[in-house]
Amino acid sequence: MKRWVSNWILVTLIDILVFNGANLVAFFIRFAFRLPPYNLDAFIRLFPFETFSLLVLFYFYGLYDWSASKTSQEVMSSVVTAIIVNTFFATMFSYMMENIGFPRTVFFISAMLQVILFLAWRLMYRSLSLRTAPSVHVMVVGPEKEWPELTIRAGKYLPRIRVHYRLPDDSLSSALWPYIGAVILGNVNQETKSRYFIECMTRNIPCLWKPNTYDLLVAGSELTSLGETPMFSLASIRTRHGSAAVKRLADITVSFFGLVTFFPILLLIGLVILIDSGRPILYRQERITAGGRHFMLVKFRTMVPDAEKTTGPVLAKADDPRITRFGKFLRATHLDELPQLWNILKGDMSLVGPRPERPVFVDQHRRNIAFYELRHLSTPGLTGLAQVAGSYTSTPEEKATYDLAYAKTWSWLKDLSIVIRTIIQIPFKKDQQ
Image 1: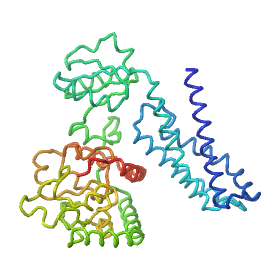
Image 2 (image 1 turned 60 degrees about the horizontal axis):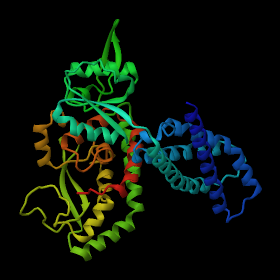
Image 3 (image 1 turned 135 degrees about the horizontal axis):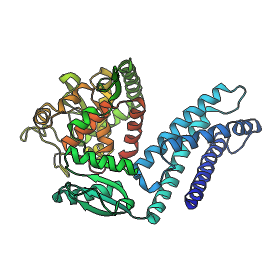
Image 4 (image 1 turned 135 degrees about the vertical axis):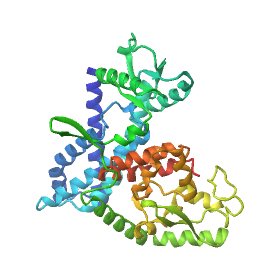
């Protein structure tokens, strides 16, 4: 306990130094390496509020939890989100204060520096924590044939593990329970789930399991009552209370300014495609949006013309010979997706939501995935939870699970988190299709 407290104090002090160091450097950059007394006074006045706000946000986003329990992607997402929110709060607070000489450009410069410095420091801290972290005892419960796959999942959840296997019908009593740090369930029946859920909750142990259709449908339900009888109210998938209109307004604003901002880049990409592989520059493909309506999705062409003329609709593969030289670069950087800002502006898509699929694949998934049709109650997006939490190798059922979970638990904060995670993960997604 004493070691944990001293470690927490050290990490907090370094966070304070990094944060205020970034602010001071931003001041020096803004004022050409001078620090006018009037502006220094503004920094001193804002220092307590900004610092306290950042520490609270870091705590809220779990950055003071055991560092090794988070993946590098989770650390990066939490750090960037906390910095963006704190910068917004600090800017608003400075506007409310009178006679404060804190130029707004300092906030922008400082935020950029904070992202760089905090990512470097926090990822280094996570790496050091992993080296000294003790092994965690994990109980894997499921049929013996699932043990190898469940072990891989456990290794992704926790960095250093010692696995203990149990069959679904095995007794709950075990001398190992006081040492167990997590439980992972495989394909087990509802009765077995309930037994382990109760045991894990009693012992305050995290329990992970792959959700089935029922789990997904009841996610986000609210407890209400009929008379004195407690009842669950099934959560709606559609956004309500004006949120859909505000979300649409946000989509229009972002897509319009995005098209204006990136217009020179769009022209340059189009010119390179024309030189590299000729016409057409854009590629239009039929997709399905909310309500099952068909629309034409627009992308930069990354394959040779008429790539599916002889094969029909097929997914791209690694090192697909149909992908052009420049197309590989566009796919790796996701720049081929930029024209979809036009689809967002038109209303066919949203900035965040389930990715729109082609009709031929939708027909296949409808037959094989019980809840697949529910994803079409939400407007498809340029990015989504399946894209940041899953991967290109995720099965259609796993992607549909993410899509339904997103729709059932939608919030503005979740959309912001997905956008930030998307931006962070672009350089690291090497398994493009």
